Image 1 (cartoon, protein in one colour):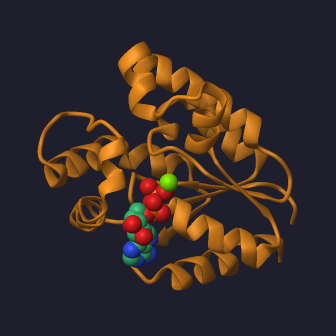
Image 2 (cartoon, rainbow, N blue to C red):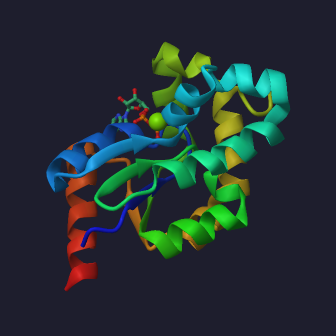
Length: 173
Ligand code: ADP
Ligand code: MG
C-alpha cells in the first residue's frame, strides 16, 4: 500500500501525536493540514478566522488538504475537515481514512491540560466539555461517513498506532 493515510477526528483526538508515530512505523512522510495552512499564509488558525471568518478558513483548509496529499504520506487533518462533502469524497477516493474516536470528556481533558489549545478560538465560546460534546454530536455522522476504519483513540498512542497498522494491513490482504 502506498496511498495516503488520512487521520480524521475532533481536535485533541491525537491526529498529530498518533500520525507522527504511524508515519515513522510505515516509513511515510507526515503532514498536517493545519501546519501547511499556517506555513502558506504565515498566520495562525486564530488569525485566519479573525480576518476571513470560518468560511474563509474552511476554503483554505480544503486547499491544504489537496496540497499535502501524496503517496506514502500520513496526513493529520483539521478537526472540521469532514464538514465539506468534497473533502470527505477526496479523502475516501485518494486513500485510507481513519477516524480516531474519543468521547467529549477525554477530548476536553486533553485540550484543557495543554496551553496550545488556546491558539485556537473555541467554536461556540462555551465551556470546553460542553463545546466538545456539541461538536461531536454535529460531526459524528460525518466522521463515520468519511471513515474506512474507526479506531478507539482513548488508548495509549502506541496502541492506537498499532491498531491502525493492523487495519491497513487487512486492507492490503
Ligand atoms: P489533534 O492533532 O487531533 O488535535 P494531538 O495529537 O495534538 O491531537 O493531541 C492533543 C493532546 O492530547 C496532546 O497534548 C497529546 O499529547 C494528547 N494525546 C494525544 N493522543 C493521546 C492518547 N492516545 N493518550 C493520551 N494523550 C493523548
Ligand atoms: Mg493536530
